Length: 127
Image 1: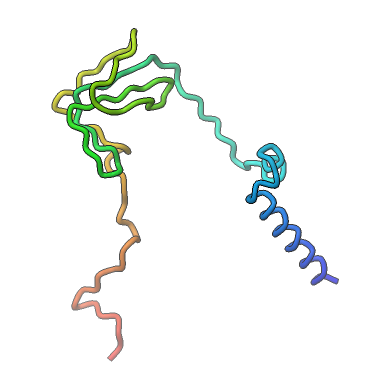
Image 2: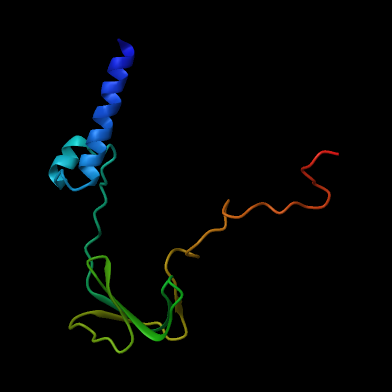
């Protein structure tokens, strides 16, 4: 009896999963089936349009933009590049000689992504 209930439950879960990921279930139905247990309460601070100009920008995809600008609006980056038009009323920050990188310090991590190098005095095989 228990096996039958487990099989029914597993079948139901598989059906719901495939229906939700295949587009058969709309976004609202998906939210009803799988409510977010930890909904975000983040609200961006009110801000004005800001342009950081004349910076060396590393995009995080390997590109480097010398003398570049970043346009930010409503807490989001809306444009990045060189020779951008400065929106009327925007605060302009001259970053000449400064670097802009994505993330706090670095855009990647080596933590647990490569095999550990064995030191000669720490052999793993037994003799």
